[in-house]
Image (cartoon, rainbow, N blue to C red):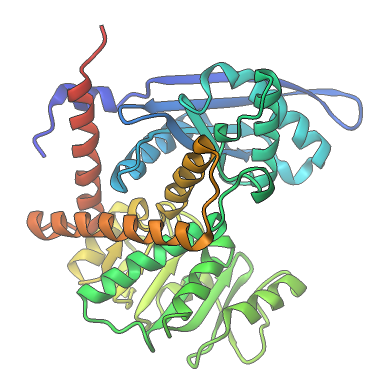
Length: 395
């Protein structure tokens, strides 16, 4: 890229990192102090944007890395945001709804000076959801004295959330897989698909790609996986999971492990679970023609090289799963203008932006003879560098 070393030095460091103590009165009457953090990487295009995660292993370095990742992701799809991330060190599985609400509202209060519709717009992440976003929206609005729905995205529909948001990450993933299939002359009708991770992203990805006539032959969750070469109905598998707690045991399927699922002889593999699933050890055995990364970071750099050399076409996470932040941007625009768009309108705008982003990355992939992940980074950093250079450094 011949990136200006001064620009590189700037982008290696987040603009701001705030760590706060969060005293919360627990249900047993005792006060417990949690640690929260918000990292804002760079805002050359517009407000910072990024989720807030609740997890016992959250640390500042992780949040810094994820904030940079968000800068890259928003730049790849060309939406006017910078990157941010937030986190609270806690175990939400061991906390009541009342404790979580108090924790969320306290955190909002402590970071209120650095968030806002034109400053930093949080969103859900690991173990946070529409519910927590509604609490942040309410806390911030109470402090301002009027409703400010545009302060967060990923809210419930009833308080300004966008139609189409729940499926947006999956829809973006499937759109980019469809575009990759076109380049590889692979017909999605009848194509075999394996989906690792049957949460929100994996489930909707399976449903949406099945609408193209693809055959879902394997899915998995944290308990294990199922396989049927003739295909399964993802909606019925989800009904089974809701009843039993896992996809395992779905009638007419063979039980397999998550590791075995990755190495199945399928046309399309969608890793939509945890990071570091495709490694140097198993990458040589990946038989899929296309890997569409619904999850963040499922492929290690070593595996990336192996897959590229073996002719596996990887649609990287920063492109494939950017549908979520893209529709978050649309939610923000609707809130700012006090408009409400139909689901078809949202999906149409998402389709246009994801196809354009894919084409831009694919063009660099061909020109530079690099794999798609490097091509996506090139597209992102070119945009960020141009914006930083155009604005200059104050003072």
